[in-house]
Image (cartoon, rainbow, N blue to C red; front, top):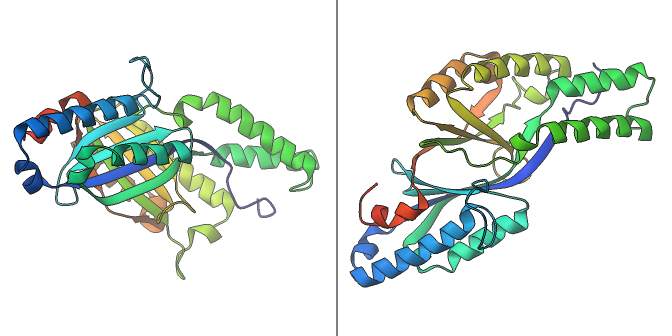
Length: 281
């Protein structure tokens, strides 16, 4: 594998934006009740329009592309998760939200921009080995065509995973992460075959939790401060702890992973935002 490209193939899908806000409760309580009702109704209408990722008139059966969560802890009060077809569409989401009167009570405390990604370590190895067996020179037009064929085939088969709907789960856990690249331990200097082996073993842990946790991985190299963003969705938040704890013992995490801040929230149906603004989850 030493003569093969070190970079695994990936397929990308939806652009993703995570927004984290602090809510100005003092200013909100000082607002007249009639004005509160008007502001809440406007915000709900705008967010409902975003919910299925399309303009007004979208079928309620369409995939959920915007979801709202009530955040726990001091890091913020509300989390919005958006999946869209492009960065431009995500930017429009930001602009639409900025036009609401509710935005005057929201202070952004964090955000994360990425693109839903599926890494193809095993398919990459098979593709590179097949191309070599055919005598194709690395990066030649014929070699590139072989790679393109693999990516096209995988993208078609994995469309539901790379263009996801926000899972209908009660809890969310989001965190960014890197692979270490320091002087003593550097993921990016590990031979491809070793990385492929470790990622396979790492993935097997996640598969054991597949019936309890829905996971969406997004790549953010060149887009945000970390290399990947991880979304976990579940009906039982304790499962987040169990899954992540078990993965810490896995070689790829124990040796090569760096984790950012963790953010956790409870699903807040958009139509119930008015109740939340009144102090009721």
